[in-house]
Length: 331
Image (spheres, rainbow, N blue to C red):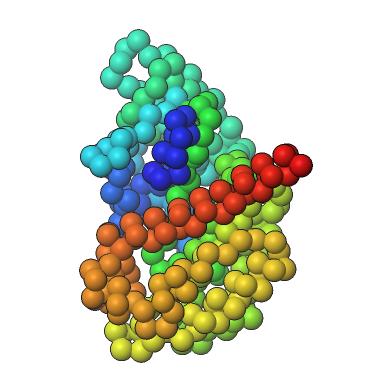
């Protein structure tokens, strides 16, 4: 929201989303998926799960012959998003038919399905604020299921898109299990990738800094392969405790890994661990109502503060870049 309001015309669209509640997980507050039918889920933290996964780290599958999904934006504090294009990412073996509709009969909806890539794209003649999807079995012999991997909501407007993804409990190795991650990254073609993965690695009693570094190098390579021009920003772990009693001392090791990776691969680093105050600082955040009693997670207000701090850091560096560019031109 901060990045999309720095200047008029920078609010391009919402980008990648996933209906996490369909997988039995918590959903971001600002968009609300409502669905029908029975769906089973796969996620990247479960080693036994074998279905191909992509950007979301989740997929949901149904064998019900007729299901539906509606996604709308709450827009209570921030305005909701409109879109003119919706791309449904589904497995290449998803044989059910997916269709889109809207309440306005004057809206023309065109679509195209790329079976091999596993996606169906809908174009709307007028901007929409709610997505209505219907998934149906139209051939009982040839069709047996539908798998949803995520949805891209876009317009042709310039500005900032925000593609958000995350899985509760996921570590670096979890994302390396996502076989279609690089492929879906290439479709999104991000200009900036912010990696904030590591707290679940660090909470492992057998944390291995060198293994963590190798995992991150593989993830960075996937971004570079998907879009060589993409900037990468690494975020160090927040300070945290195990069982509210034992400081997670490997947070210092995580920061050291981030600094090495940044130097080796030319990425940026935002040192959240240092910004918070280092070892033990989450207790001070908890006393101020910015962190929860588990001494791991932030409160909603705390996450807002973290977002504001990151935004401020990015804009400060951007201001220095603009000033430096202006001085160069003056010479």
